[in-house]
Picture 1 (cartoon, rainbow, N blue to C red):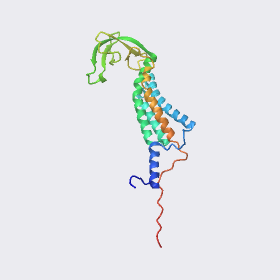
Picture 2 (picture 1 turned 120 degrees about the horizontal axis):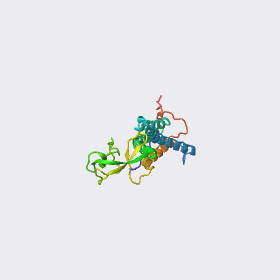
Picture 3 (picture 1 turned 60 degrees about the horizontal axis):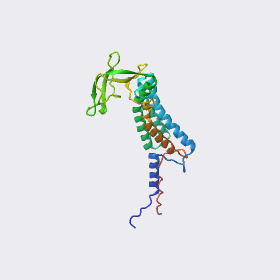
Picture 4 (picture 1 turned 45 degrees about the vertical axis):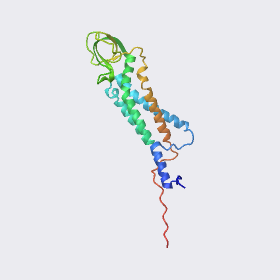
Length: 241
């Protein structure tokens, strides 16, 4: 009858199972994963996220350019992806984790600067000398950018966008946070900001990376040592005498 599908031959079934295992991981367990496996997966995900963010914070805190710029975080993201490849996690999940790790590593440096300024920064008033940007500007992501000078009249090398608004005019004052050690660039202070705000923006990326890493580790579980796959050999056709 039309509409009925013939069952796949054994070699094709083995091929499909092998492809699913290679792409998403075999997950050779019944029901929920073992507790030790879930704990190991959580540890791997948390270690990866903490390493990516932690290297950026350490680089900004101690003034290490290679770490403060996010390069150390990219190395940590690559190491996490390499670990998942070593445990033979699904290739699709490894790719997802790698992309999330890179995104987190690129966003971590700005948050790290905020952490440093929140911990050891001092807030002073700066005088606005000019205002540029806005929604119609080509650069600056539509933000208003204020050039400011410190209390001694020395212009800052960076322009401030936090606290710089459409109503800001030359001669106004903005609150600017300075690093007491001078290792990170000054930054404007927004009204009502809390010390936890710099890392709060990374929470979603870090949580997603941890979950993806956990799924990759859990699904990489195998009951036996993996062996290279090969389709079942076809039985020889007997020949007549």
